[in-house]
Image 1 (cartoon, one colour):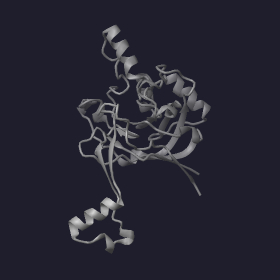
Image 2: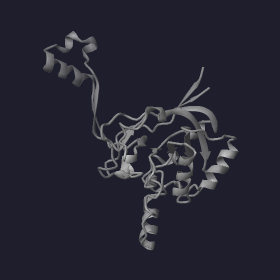
Image 3: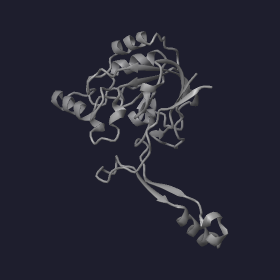
Image 4: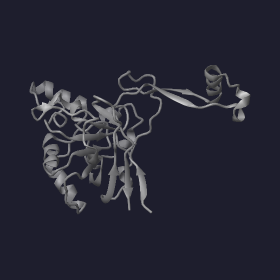
Length: 253
């Protein structure tokens, strides 16, 4: 029997101090409230329900498509990619999201020290893995350990434009990371972009003008072998969406 490894972050109520754009808000209605709803909707008394209970229901009142483990669509990066209208998350091919996976170990890298193309090639050699078209590449940084910390957004080495482009050229269409974002932390990119007053520094890997997808905020990559497993990471089919939350899972023989 294969082993299934959950690579997804938990979806839970976010701290109140987080800004709306980053916070998840969930309203929970318990079984007693469900019984009241059934009586109000259908006239069925709680005494006619098992243990006097109705249905439990949760409502996601504030849940951005990027708030959990999610797949970014090309539309997230720019309105056009490769001279054409960028694909939204409901338009990317499903075959991209169930494929052999490989882990590139970047746990030794410091925050803001991004993975280069050479780093990726060395990690592939260490994994004894030769990339094939549509392989799913997962960059392990170990920053999932800080998921619940206030400075999670500021952690992670990130990936360079050149490394992203090199992976794309090998036929990779889905790349993932166990940090807040695929690029280096935003505040570090911002400092460099402003100091140098140059385009192409802030969000460089996202805006690489390539039609590819990223999985951000992965979990448990340390539980995987470096190669020899399959990744399943289908995003929710949100029409016109820049991203879709995913229950990313690795299937290990």
